[in-house]
Image (tube, rainbow, N blue to C red; front, side, top):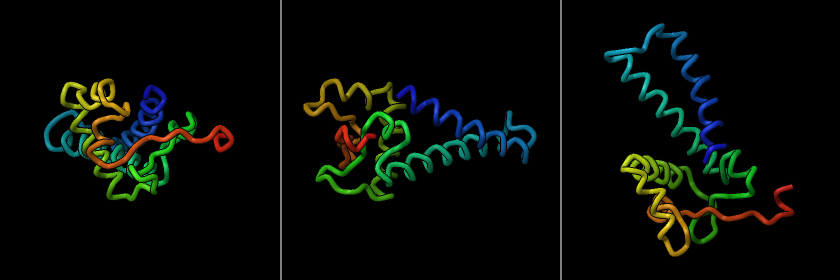
Length: 127
């Protein structure tokens, strides 16, 4: 998660730079709300794009892949659903993350709800 956060921070940094070159200040009012929604849209787009292709760079680095419960490819729609569930689960006191501690398969709540799971890649596939 830390590696994922670093990658996302870099992406959001570049996105914020572009936004602030257009709108020189985003400290208050409607521009601040637009800036926040813009960054949220960038983050959601990043995850949906990567998850619908098997996983993010951090997941692939650690030998993980996002698949459906039946082992299939995750569609963009399912990836978006997973992202929305993750946003809700993480913002509600981190309940979505704590869920994995008690889940019988150690899955996050957003994976259960979206019908996805994180699978380990075979060692040969990582190289």
